[in-house]
Image 1 (cartoon, rainbow, N blue to C red):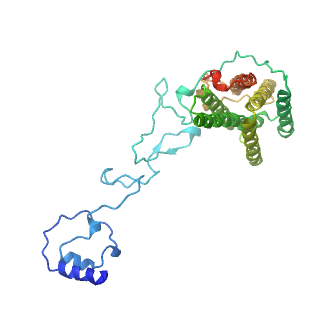
Image 2 (image 1 turned 120 degrees about the vertical axis):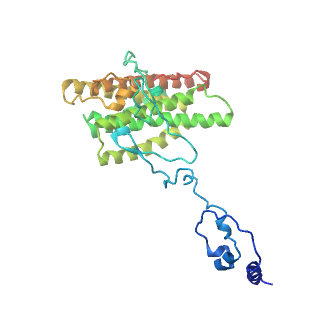
Image 3 (image 1 turned 180 degrees about the horizontal axis):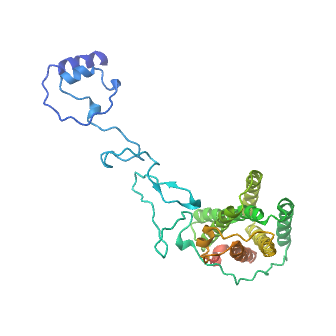
Length: 343
């Protein structure tokens, strides 16, 4: 007997068999494909379709209406929260997994408005660092690194000239790449060899994050034009791949390049300060993100921001020249403790 004839015979048999009344569950949409028999035959038998006994499967990002008071909420939509970064209103995300949004407050009890960094990530820049230190090239590799950086500076001077805010924006999009590449490769090396990195993974990733915060700050000061954004895409694509290969071939050369790159950054920010002091560039109030990130006092200006950014670049210069020296002495970076927290 075919399955279709068997299903029909079963339905006819059930239509004459008394079945105790079953409690009705919350009705849902049932499909005609669930049963071979008609809905009328099932009701005469006193049975609900099987789909009435099991609630429909819900997406993992939705909450059960019975648990949230019958409110129909969709994933990714909820009430608005107070204005966040940039002053724009944000929408809270509903999580099925019970991950609560973090609520952080300042020391004065006011709500922390930044999600890209937390109060424990902030610091006061060390402005007493020596800005005149320079690594004199002694080997062919050092000279190649220095000449590479000088060659990269030449087209930048032509393109940006004295628009130092835009130059800073472009500089930070490049300066944030080496730390991420170095941290990535050291991370993979640590996994392959089952060994510690001496803290250098964290140090390099901190450097990349610090440079990215420089970019987020200068984005508030100078809004890049469309062709400057296009230039960032091109430069980042070329520089990332070139630095990635360079670090694989010779880490000491890669770190030396970054050391000289930071020296050029110090020079650029020094010229930036001169233009502010001369009045060529308006000394506007410091962005709110800079006040919180560097713990600057209220009333700080753009000049104060450039000062702390220049100090950060000087610290990055020292770290990368130090890393290159470790490799020149025939050691791995893990042999020398990393300067964690050294901005």
